[in-house]
Image (cartoon, one colour):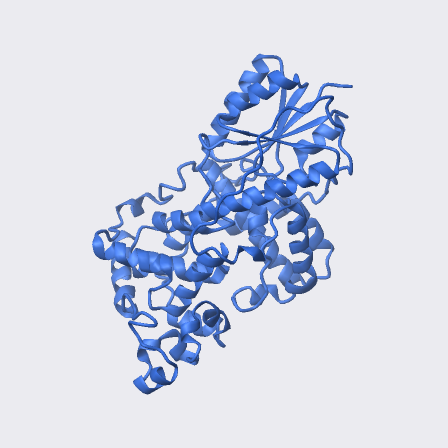
Length: 471
């Protein structure tokens, strides 16, 4: 039997369309599937994302076992653990799929150099993105794109590979399996009691895609803005841990009976992920540093009152129902509807003048799909300090946003049942309701539901003055 190949899984917890796995199969070598819980060289995933990862690892282990293989789990410094496994198994090669944030790049580069110096074949592949983050560049300046629309047009002009590689039903096994740690499961954070709606793992990702293409993509271009409608893909958590490839999303969506408008909008969302990774790759300090340097001078609020406001935002008790509904959805489900994410993020930054980095960190902690590129790039976009950023004068009115995108109040009332008796404009601005209406709805402002922690017009004007001074 030929020597095995170690396939090091990281942010690619699937078998189909996994280029490192494909290379091992094509080499006709036994596969040793390895996952290392390396918390030293990459940003530690948040509590909900870690819960998802552990569920996904279990699903991967089960699928490998069904195909005559095993998942070997190790914990600690990746280089040390990899070297130890190499000593145990004497592999002919080590394969992995690339990651694109600075800590992982530095780690992988050092490991690759060390293995090559020891005459061990090592290869890395792209199985995370449609394009390498250095691949699509402006033709005129030969520099990375700073604006999404021309970037995405250039990607489409280049052409998108939609060929899919299907894993075999049986893998070659080594003559002896190395020892493995037992899989553990991360405890859920407080309040996250509705995560059972998800099915982490490759099979769950495929089911989610098929449901989306058969039911929810029709009318996606417009319906995706309405949080009460089942009009979003809900694929982001699956993409976060690589349970499905963006190539498969493109291939299956292209083959589905979908309108051009809906298809184009969905593809643009995949394109935003590509753009975010390109931005992160070329700006490795993205999570801590504004892409537009002038924003580093922004006078963020600090002190006890700001801390109270931040806690109210995290807990969904700002007094603005559409904001609070989103924050409670996040806490309970590990997810938040995209339109509501923008409203909630804008409220923190522009109504409360609290540093976007604090909001990014909270989303990182509580989102199942907290992605190293998407999460940071999107927060910088809302703050107006990032690539292709929203203009500073775009300050969402949470009252109007609620009325426009949740007109029947179904989403808002799902997460704020204490306001079930209100409707229309009063649902989204209960402090304007007459006392008899509040009494009939069993709403006691300041008791059963909080009063607004800041007045909208005041907050908007305050933010505009500051942003204008920076412009």
